[in-house]
Length: 69
Length: 272
Image (cartoon, rainbow over all chains, first blue to last red; front, side):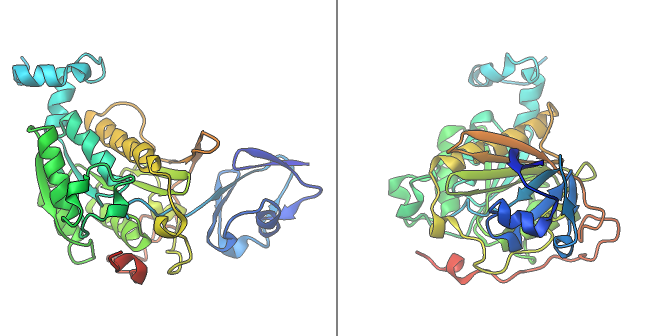
């Protein structure tokens, strides 16, 4: 089955939790990432209980500081 | 008839010829007031393009002095400015670029005690977050929500950048996307991780573009979108984001009703 993570297709064998996907898709610093599943925010508390299924679109949104110094 | 002088008609001729700007639009820009918080990698190019565009009032906020290591990307400052307060150096550059621009400077670190007064000082139309640290980013977001002011957030690191624009009542705020501050030192800074100098130019110039579009009332702003840019892949992505009804500051039942001074990472306060 295929999901889309940050615009890139990703093959996974079976539905997995957001928490597992963060590992499989090699999210940087998963503890601080904001996750959107099909356009809806997923609370960090729901990472383990929320399932990613075939055709789902997932966005990992990262903190980015930088800028001044 | 236009109130523009002959010199202004010539200086801004490439704007005026644009159907979406024209003489009327240029007059709007000359009457525009933009506050740039942080005159570094993002704020430097943003402020310079706003000045060149003829934005009539530009506020510069920074507490730092120009360091040699800033010059790789903070193009508003020159080699001879090393050691000078950034707001002074920024003001001198803008004054030399365009006498139409009135520069207001605030040699301060933004805190809960001063940010609302700074925004109110000239009743700025639009705010640019060019800061490098999360306490300031959350403070600017919350202050703009409380003051009902639009602003554009941006961040840059290594070869990546991001940008979003908040307009009161029209879309999500920064906290809708990032509800809580990352712990101190959890997210690397440019000083720790590095940044390609042009990143500030690309993303800061996009921030200036948002400010100009807002003042002109043209086009679509990045409200409801987080734009991300990856310079290595040369890839721009617009990710649709929604207002979060549970947002602590702009949600339906806000729990944050006063500004918060988060702990400033010690490494960011130290001169280097």
